Structure formats: structure tokens, C-alpha cells
Image (cartoon, rainbow, N blue to C red; front, side, top):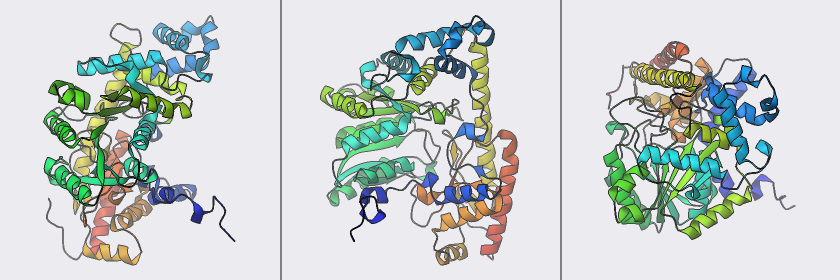
Length: 481
């Protein structure tokens, strides 16, 4: 009997090839253990509110009023909500054709796209056109939309940094394209070497792959590094010479934990480079309300800005967006609030600024606690988290541990992470889920657990790691990078 259309064996092969490690085997096992009553610390995904981060007050007040506009007619509304939150809710409701329950334009509300354009202009010092900004259900949807448009067949390649966020590998597989890895240098604090890029593109071409686009994640996920302006300039020159579109994943631009390398956008550097590059390199840049000090992952608000794309291509993007009718409207309002927050002199400014500062300063301290904690462990070495929300330590697994993993039918770092989960309840993601060099093993953990819990978590990790290394090696330590 022939298989039914939705039987596993008759599914689209691209769906089967698509793997998303952040919600993979480790996460599923952690969920099972949680159901059995074990306390699980989910550090597998950058999900700040799930780990105790409090929502910022002002945006929640505004969206609450937008969700329940009848509150605006209550004579006591001013007792519960500050005047600037009431004014902002009125401002956003006036942009809609029927409140939050009505579809918006497929590109997002024009007034909010204008606010995003003004934010980009303030940030970069160069004009931004609201017509080239599309609001999306989180940055991921925008990434998928652009990759869907670029990838035509399995001979179309996308240059992706390795280690990489598995959104890219999974989406490229789903759309039937070819991922072309370029390796970041761990010994150079996960720096990007243009020589590696040239080597990756020539190897791909020798296999008949046409490389059409390059992805950068800045600050890096899972690696946490911040690209310098000089590095971004080199990347843009490379894209110009090789005729590549650049997809700049900049969702962690507010998450910076050092002062030496501040965030600089690819758009700003591109505009500074002048003609012909500034008018030739095709750039798509992404941002979201899920990260930064907002952490509103469940709201699914994002945008992408298109630079140097033809009007015909922009029209095609509109057509693709229209298939989904409209990005969710509450998320669009969160995006408007993120790019246009309370200003000095506003009633809510002091509280908003204090809440934001407290979150960012705590994240900076947690980045340091976690890095130092990993580096105090046997056979573990970790670069400092300069930005984003993750630590990506290298675990020097002894040969006996690698053999034990093979006997168990597991990839070595999956084996280690499963043992860590069972012993401590700490749910991480193995480095193999992000890509890594042959014979090198990592894990990724967020820096998001509550600051007061961080010393206990790191002590628990150290105890497990010491016992694991004791079990699988007869002598102490390996040399560090």
C-alpha cells in the first residue's frame, strides 16, 4: 500500500534535513525530566523573561491600553497609567483601522515603519526610507523571507559563520539551498579572517555552487563577539568584489558588555564607504524586540531594512509578506516603543531608564561571572562574552569520554551535555548544533539566569565537570589555546 501524503516516508526531504538544535534532543530530554519533577534551568535558548527578567513597565502599560482601549474612556485611567503612556496608546490606536484586532498593511503600520526609519537615522547618521522597512513576526520571519527569495535551487549557496545560529542552517536546508561555512577563529576571540572567506567561496565554486549571499551575526550568536568597524568594512568590500548580498543579523545590538568594541551597524559602515560600494552592495539588516534589555521573545516583533535592492525586488517582498496578510499588530507597537522609547523630560523616562540600566548592568556582570566560572574549570576554556546573550566554552573532552560517547551512539558534546543535564538540571545546547571544527567540542549556554543564582549554577557546573574529567582521564588537564 502506498504511503499517505503526510506519512513520514513521503514528506518533503528538505523538511527532514532541517534540524534546529536549540530545541533538539537536549531540550526534549530536559522537558521530560521537568515533567518527572526535576528542577531544570533552561539555558538553551535566549528567552530572558522565562528566566526571571521583569518586563519593562512603560511598553507593557502602552500595549495594555491598546489591547483594552475601553480603559482610555475610564475617568480613573489617569490613576493607573501615566499620562505619557495614555498619550502613546492613543497615538498607536490612531494608526490602526480598528485597533489591535484588525489586520495592518502587510509591511506593517506606516507610522511605526516611519519611527523605525527615524531610529536608524539617529543611530547611523544617514537617511532611512520607511518604504524599505518591513515589520515582521520576529527577526526570524524576515530572515526566512529573504532566504526564500534568494535560494532558487541546491546550487545556490549562502555563506554562514560557523559556529552559527541554527536558524540559518535549518532554513537553508528547508529551502533546498547549500550552506557554505566560513569558520570564525576561536583563538582570535572568534574573529573573522577574510582569508577564510576567500577559501570558503572558492571551495564552494569548485563544487559548482553559486554563492549568492553572506550572513553576519553581530554581536555573535553563539560566540558573543562584536565585529570591529574595520572588520565590517572588509566584509562589505568582499561582498562588493564577489557580488554577494549581505544579510546583517544585528538583533543583539543593545547587548554590549565591554567598551572597547561598541556596536556599529553594517548600514552605517556601508554609507561611510562612499561610491561605488555604498550604492552597489545589497544589504538587508535585522532587528527585534526579543533581545536587548527588552527580551520580549513571546511578542514576536521584528523588522528588516533593505538597502540597494531594486524597486521590483521590494515589490516581490511585499507580495511574499502579503501571503501572511499582516505581521501581528501588538508586536508592531512593541517595535515602535523600542525604537521610540520615553525621552528625557517624559513622565516615564526616569523609571524606564532605571529599569533598562539595571538589566544591562546585570547582564554585563553575569557575562563576567560565567566566563570566569568556565575558565576556572578543568579542561574548559572560554572567550569573554563581549555581546549578545551567550557563553560558548570549549570543552576539552578526554579520549576515553569520546570513546564512551561513540559506544553510547552519541556525538561527544551531546554525550557531555546530556550527562550535565542529568547531574545538574542545566539544559544547554551542544556545540555540534551550531557547527564547529572537526575534533573540537563546545556547549552554548545563555547568560540569562538570575544574577543571584549564577554563583550556584557555576559551582554546580564546576562540580559536575571535575567529576566527569576525573572519571574519563587518568592525568590532569590539556594545554589551553
